[in-house]
Length: 86
Length: 179
Image 1 (cartoon, rainbow over the protein chains, first blue to last red):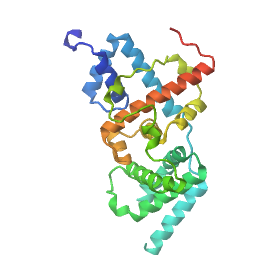
Image 2 (cartoon, rainbow over the protein chains, first blue to last red; image 1 turned 120 degrees about the horizontal axis):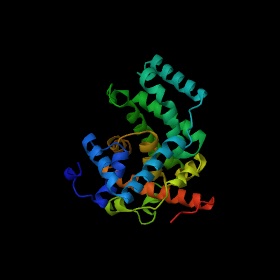
Image 3 (cartoon, chains in turn yellow, green; image 1 turned 135 degrees about the vertical axis):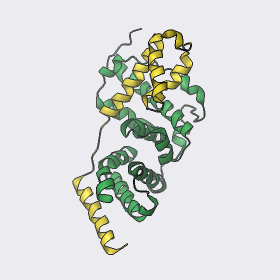
Image 4 (cartoon, helix red, strand yellow; image 1 turned 180 degrees about the vertical axis):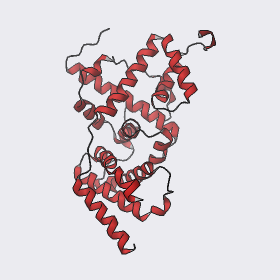
């Protein structure tokens, strides 16, 4: 299988880490990346740190919700504008 | 249209507005203004397209045009003056910040939120849109009106600053890097 893989290029790999994590590559490109990742411990560590950070932000950054009062107020205003024909 | 597609996005919009302003009243005003503008300019929205990206763009523009002017906050200087950062600097994509994966396990949400809140607003914005709201680079580029290449480089820089802050927090809390 390895014979089909191009030579591992750390610089190129590092440039692609965010593209993979952010879902910006095609499935084929992502699959190749994830196969290649096993060939270099430095790149694997780097990838894992970035993945962990992205998950951490998504899950642990404080989430604030809109108050029920504001939701009702906005809905009322839109309803009122719709009714007035504005 | 409003009931089915736009009203369900109020919480996400409020969260974005709050992280831009750090102020509940200002976030309330921004969300309210966003919906009133959405109503006024509903003809410019194509049904079936990305309603969330459309509303976020309205909110971001309201933040830039109204909120920042009102509060006389700086616009772009905050990130341009940040450590000599240059959006076009593609060499930054190879920057490697040594942050041990284990460090994250010792950090709690408050510290991540604090680190994010301390980022200059332009960096904070791309992190929120990408990692919290899961927008694509193309959608982010449209929302904040910058080229996709700039989205990429800004995200990269923002994440490196964030990692550096988290590394410092972890070190302050007694984590010792294993070298």
